[in-house]
Amino acid sequence: MEKITANFALDELIYSPTANRLGIDNTPDKEIKEKLIRLAKEILQPIRNKWGSAVVVTSAYRCEALNKAVGGSKTSQHRLGEAADIKVGSKAQNKALFNLIQKMVSNGELKVGQLIDEYGYSWVHVSLPRTNGKPNNQILHLK
Ligand SMILES: [Zn+2]
Image (cartoon, rainbow, N blue to C red; front, top):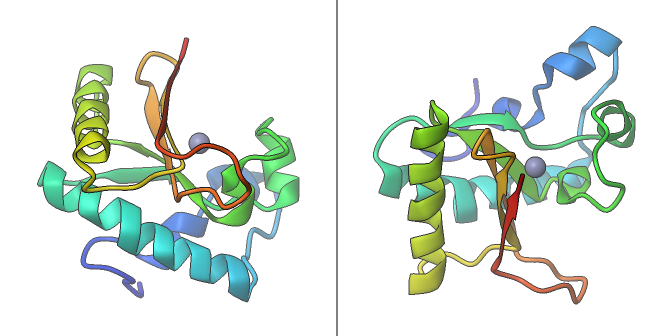
């Protein structure tokens, strides 16, 4: 598996059990591939380095059909290869990860589009800074 940073491979950012199950081709085009590489380099690897142990990507890129299948928002940064859902273990551990990322953002160590606690720390959504005029370093909690 081709690594794009010390701890992340492009395949991990494309792989989707749902896409496999439904026979959806989730192959990104060149532009999206470049975004995924930036996502790994600028967001995921710095988080992994700070956290100090494995960070699992549960979903990153979603083509339109896959995004529809998982009920994702039409304007989701996942569609653009700009967002990843990550987890490290239990909700308590995911909460610790979220707090660490929040600290990195407030320190200015990391610039994100959004940092979202999804459903009581079931997982953490993190994205590249947005270029569409929407606010960056936005921190949200979804119940
Ligand atoms: Zn997400």
